[in-house]
Image (cartoon, rainbow, N blue to C red; front, side, top):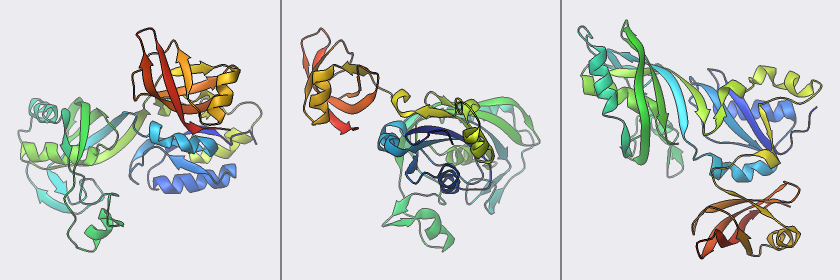
Length: 305
């Protein structure tokens, strides 16, 4: 078994199981208990799941915020209570005369930064109870919303029997199901998400991922497991990196501030700290900038020993 105790694992999730199911399978296959994930996928959705293993679980909060890219299909002419194909039909309308230009215009209205309400059947919690549990019991689902940014939401190809392929680029926490539902509502014919596949999370691509079925063979084979595994020291983070000398490394290990040079960041920004051996030793924040020559004071916040 290749050494995979601390790092990132890129998994290509198949349809039918939950993200938690994937985590459980990986735990068994790699005999690793400490595993987190950077954003769930609905059971019917497929594509990239980014798993954090071992010490990397402490980085989940930084990685989970990365923007996401999806490909999917909207089916027009019917809306459902779950906003996807798994739900009960709540509205139907003929789609005769529906044009691609009209759909494109409706989708364009959903690009931008705004408050988005989740679908009634979602994993969000209120007083410890998930919204889909309330919905299944017929109880009222609290109205909530979250600020999201949709960078791109556009058609791919032509309308085919009321179905349209699309691409979506957005911030973490954006519901593709809600976008599909809202597009259908704007057009007056209803619509729901027929399929969804996550292609990217930040710099990570599903092209490099491994399926759960191939996991054991990939990690028991001779040699490195390939691009699906990113060792702890090589994990890219969405902020600058600074190299600490031996004296600074000792101070960082004890949670003390260090004076660093030649970095591009402002007060409050996060910094990745590595030592002279290129080992990842901590994540810190800039507490003070000194002058305009890239000098500042960094306070370690997450220290790896």
